[in-house]
Length: 166
Image (cartoon, rainbow, N blue to C red; front, side, top):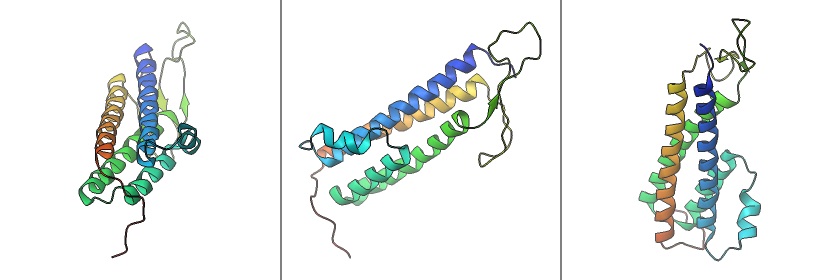
């Protein structure tokens, strides 16, 4: 499958969409820590952290600060979706890509895009620009859902103590 500018654009769109999702996760941690937490404190706990660590912090803080079953259920659903789009993003950006030219006159830009490593991500797969675009769209949708959840967080009364064991 020839690699063209559309492939590169869509791969970039995936990277940008996931970066937005990571930043939104950082802001969710901030919201859960409370508006009175100094910016340097929540930044120290979020900046440069892997996405898995951010979702762990969101889950942990939400269970402590927002012990509302309906909200926590929605948050858990979001975390499951976030993990799925993270996997899709990793499949595209973190596996072995090779480029090759089938014709000598092709430019230095790769003329084929093929995932060539067989690893935990499964079988060999060709991606069309449309496939890549749809991955970016799913990531953006998960980011929008977290924005909505963060707005809900800010409206709910937050607890400052650990929930009682039942």
